[in-house]
Image (spheres, rainbow, N blue to C red):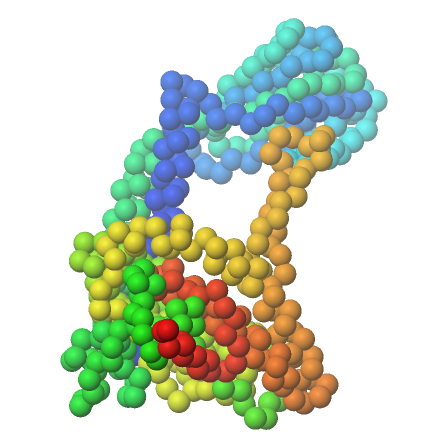
Length: 493
């Protein structure tokens, strides 16, 4: 791979991810800004707090800064509703609160967990009885009375504390508290994030596509295995383009010697020849050895996603998959298959995978025939709607099936909902194969052939959903290290 294109690919991926993050943050900030329009506040749900002491205080609120923050930049609103008599709520400097509660039995709120809701307190013993909090003049903001009391505080630098008490300074405080916040600069921040995110994302996408085009042009077609429909300039010298495979979208030809439709060769060919002798223990540390490849594949798959979208637009308007992008994406799939074959999708070889998009003499390879034409309209539905049956099967094979955990009835609404993935069929079979290799020193060939069949199914579906072919993947498990031979149809009567 050319270093200039590699650097361009990395920079484009980084710019795209940063731009996407900024754009997402900008959209979220825009929604939040619209919700707090008209001097509104973004509020959290109310929660119950109680203490047997005279006062309930917050932890130290340290606000960094040495000068005043302009009014309205950041504001906090606190609402307190007493379950008994009158309630008092106030915000003041920490030093004033410490002086007021000296030798007074009070309770400090240490931590709050949301899912499930749980409050942790620290009891501070004392024997003195506090004076009425509403009679003190040093509160920055305060409110006292029956029902719900509210204070709004413009954030200032310093160390602050929130105090909630009964208005008559009696013990046993029990209240419902609700907090809200308002950021005055949220609107301009949202606009800036959206504009900067779009510009950075477009720059990153342009760099990724240009680098993929360059890398695709620099990836040669392996001699002896030219892709069907590839432009003549890209074919090896002296070779003729092979006939295109029949499409599943049309009627297959009939007559003597024609392959059965259900068993025709798929235009994506995955092969993997196992080593005759494998190390018993090396597979235990291959997770560490493949880390350099995983880092590279992260950037390559980010580019694969972008180039697939770009190719989709090209197919929609021209009916053709750009040849350089096609070659690049096939190279990404080939690289991924080599790493998977070496590691935990097959454990087929101890030979370290090469760092290249091109086909080599490595024992694992992937070839995809280049399509002469693709359906303009099919590109809109085949990667999600038509592929649903296969995606359900692949979810089982790869362990991508989702399950949900229902929260207990006493948890707040929406809290505790979780999703987990099921076990991977390939992973379980590879683990079994590795254990057999560890104790016997041999690869169980029938098990290996089954694993290769599952891998082949996954990569065929990947090729189809990546818009590289219109041929629908067959519902069959082609086991073995090589593509199975195609049986011939019976002569027509």
